[in-house]
Image (cartoon, rainbow, N blue to C red):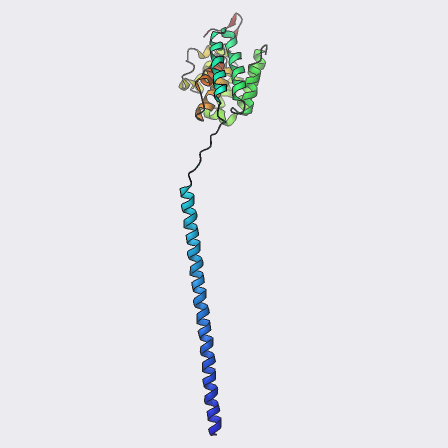
Length: 237
């Protein structure tokens, strides 16, 4: 009986030692796990802060919406403006369209550039030119909506059964073209509605992008000031 009691006491001490070791190991593992979690969180936080700091420190680079017009083209456009001002009134719109076509490829929307190419071609029928100009404006609908506060006016007036002079006058008013300081209300009825619309669309498109040089402005206005063809010839400005 005495030996059995001693054996029980020894086994109890052994089990107590083993249990203590297990608890110690488990406690240490949990501590290590918590430390690792805290370290990972701190690392993520530090990484996020560093990323934010890097992003904040990196300046946003503003990209130009249009390719820059090089000095050579500006000079060429300036020379063309001088030649256009010296040309007969009937030829000015064609020469201006031709010059804009050469200068603005890659800068103006493709349908507009194509229309300018047609408008700048000698011998093109007036009716054909008007149709092509109207098509270019229709294909540039989103831009036209910015140029004309009443974008539907273009289609509405184009289809209206009225004299060309009335169409030009109505389009001028509907689109508030007076705000461009390029054409007066008195001049509008003497000009082609299609050319006026296309020229001022070019002017507005480049102007809204801060990419309108003085010669480009003069060329766009010359396109817009296309005199109506009458039985006695083009209307004078």
